[in-house]
Image (tube, rainbow, N blue to C red; front, side):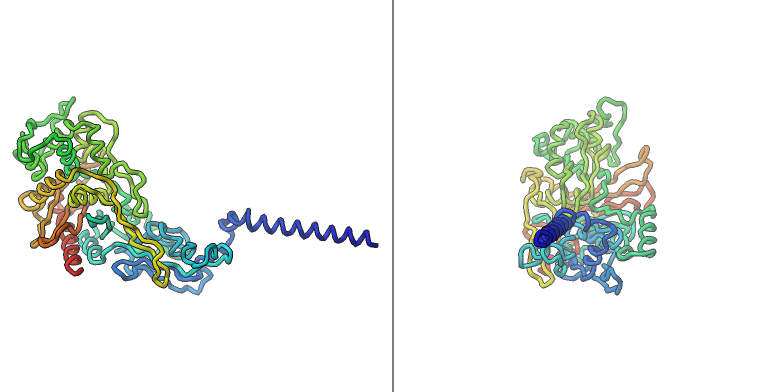
Length: 489
C-alpha cells in the first residue's frame, strides 16, 4: 500500500515538474515567437487599448487618437495630416509605422521601459505605460509657409538652423492624410492601394527619401573645394577657363546659359552660374579632392538618421575625367536629397562647421517628464572658416545682383544659389528647379535658417524653368517665417 502511494506521489511530482518545465519553456523560450505570431491578437489588442502618445510641433500636438470601441480600441488621427505627414509618417493598425511614428514607436506606444519608474516593470507585469510624447524641432509657421509655397506641385523643402542642426521645416508635396490608413478593414485597405497607385507618389517623402540631380546648386560644393585646395586664391581673378569649354577626352561642348563665362572669375561663375568655369575647376581639383569635399558635406553617408533614415546623397567614387566635370556641376550621377542641399547652405552659413541635423528635440512621459533630449553635435568640418566667409559673400551677390534676386528680403542678409537640373533620357524630362539659401536678420549675430527647395513640375515653359523663378520664392517665404519666429524669441 505504502509502495503504491510512493509511486503515485513520484508520478505526480514528475507531472508537476514537467508542467513547470513546459510553462517555463513557453514563457521564456517561446514567448517571443508567440508574441509575434500573426494569429495572436493579444499583442495587438494590448498595443491599442490605450491612446498613443502625441507628436508635437511648436508645443502643440499634430497627432491625436480616437476611441473606436472596437477590439483595437484607439486609432491614430492626424488633424493636419497632409501638412505634417513628412514629419510624423503614419501609424497604422494594418500597415505598421513610418518616419517619426516608427523611430519613436516604443515611446509613443508605451512600451519603452524608460516610461516606468520601476526597472523591468513592463516585462514583469506584461503591461504598457501610457504613451509618451515626442517634441519635434519643427516651427509650424515655417512648415505652413513651405507647404503653401509648393502649392501642391511635386517637390520638397528642407529648412535647418545652421548653428544647431535643428530641422525647422520638412515638407514633401503632394502629400497625403495618414489618418486614411490608420485603422483596419476595407476603407484602410482601399486608401492604401489608392495612395500607392497614384503617379505623383504622395507617400514618398521627397525631402529625405528622394534624391535629385542638384544641378547648379551643387556648384557651392565645388567652389568650396577649389578655395580649400588653394586652387583659387582670389575669387575675382580670371580662372583661365576656355570658351567654348570642351569636356576632357571628348568633342562635346559644355554650354553656358549666361554670357561672359569664358575666363570668368569664380565670383562671376557663382553669380551667373557658369557651367564651364565650375566644370573646369572640378577637373583641376581632381577626383580625390572632390571626394574629400563632398564627404565633408555629407554625401555618400549611408548612416545618416534624423532619427528616421535619410537616403544617401551620391557622388560617384569612380569616373572618367569628363564625367567628373559633369559631376562637379551637379549632373551625371550626382544626386542629393533636399535635406542634403540644406546642409550645404547651412555649412556655409555656419562658418564651415556642419551640425548634425535632427528632427526630435526631446521625448517625455505623458506627464511631461523628460526621458531623453537630443544634444547638438558637430557632424563634419565641411570647409575652412575663411572659405565659408568667401562663399557667404558670393551667395549674397547671387541674391543682390545675380540669378537669385527673387529671394531678397528687406532687413535681412540673404545668400543663395540657383540650380536647374536636367534629367531623363537625353535630358528630355522637365528640369528640376533648385534654390538653396540662408538668411540672417540685419541685427542678428548669426544666420537664422538655411533652406533648400526643389520643384519637380514647375509651371513654366521648359526653357524658362529656373531655380530663381520657381524655387526661390518658396525659399523666401520660408526664410521670412524663420526671421519672424526669431524676432519673437
